[in-house]
Length: 614
Ligand code: SF4
Image (tube, rainbow, N blue to C red):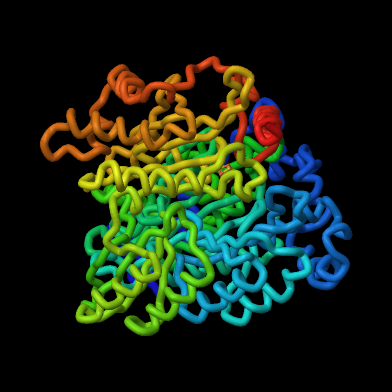
């Protein structure tokens, strides 16, 4: 598994034990102690401070499995303990879906590194067809999401996917979620290392064990062996990026990234981590988070807040001295990628000279028939290997060059475009009001309309413009790292509750990474979004410098120019001025999110309910 055998190129080997001891004893470990107790277990605060913490202490999330199979599935929805329904079910990938009166579930399947076989696709298609009204969503964590399941169906649905090696374990809840990887790991012509074994090993070690089944909050890891950071390492709790130093391959490990209402970019530990050290380091970081993570309030419980408060140097010191019992070897950061968001769409050559083809699913939505068709095409033209991406797309591997056009043609017959427009390729949307109980606006339908309209209105637009649409501030579709990010909310205009979207511009990973800037006061009426995006892009086409792409154009605008640009593009009747009555205060918007119920979220949902009564 290791390319370095634990040896750092400059050190010429791992540190001898006596050297480690002396380094560890350099100075006593001082752990920061906040003025106000934050519910950190390691500081003695074991008493639960939130209902969610109490629920987890009363019984572990992993313990609900038997009850689902042997009790709830037989006795029905009304027999389900509310603490299980809205809490522990998540440990097995089950969320109640909107509207709750329908008594149905959303179910999420974990797909480590996005790696699937045709047989697994067929099983997923069968699941969707038999129990999920045919609907399948590909999420931006490379998972599949199913909807409309009844509790009575869950045991058989689980048996169907378990037979092909798939599981829903730890796809929700305060646990390590699906570990992300590069969709072309193992076949990529430019990768430093096939990170698949590490993606699998880290996920395996942190999943299904009570050692890590009660973390302060959800916890996200991404590991890529390629140069392009396809797993969005910068916005995960742990992001491991392979690179080469003095001829040896190792990982730059970043910590404390995340989005939602308080986005943070992950920071490098400043270490060069040998591949065979990666699992051990991820375990140490996760244990530190479990012990020192904040459990006082849900919206400060992510690792990013601990890392921000301690500083990344102190965080590394605690991990080394308390959990690893050795020093990490210092190392440079991995080089930034020029490809800020490699999406794997299109036709590309693999390292073995076969080709892979990637295609978008508009806003991640597909269905059972398309899924069966993709499985059949992957068998017919490739080796039955399929991948999901972090951008709601799919990839079929291993197609001989001579067969590519036939495969592309068969995908087109399924409605899947390998050579797609910029808009089809780069628009993402979260689940939204269709199924998500936290949503206040529709998303996937709007995304499909935007794609259709822009393809008609700007047929020659061939630049890349990432449009990410979110139904609430929780940022599941990552509006902060899109060229154009839209965050949905409800405002009352002339007494009528109305869907609007706050505009964010210029989010960017890779070189000079930064979050999108809010377009102040630029909230656009939902039905005017195609008009607004079209106008923004036409302005950009008029004003850009030669060779300047949309991302660089936005980055070059100073704050004043960006604000002017955002407002100038607003078509008549589209702008909703700041201060228009919302179901919550502006201050509450900032404090909302992290998928918890807040005053703002409740007020927004109340406004939504009112809108639906009209
Ligand atoms: Fe639901 Fe909000 Fe996440 Fe969209 S961003 S899926 S609406 S919680």
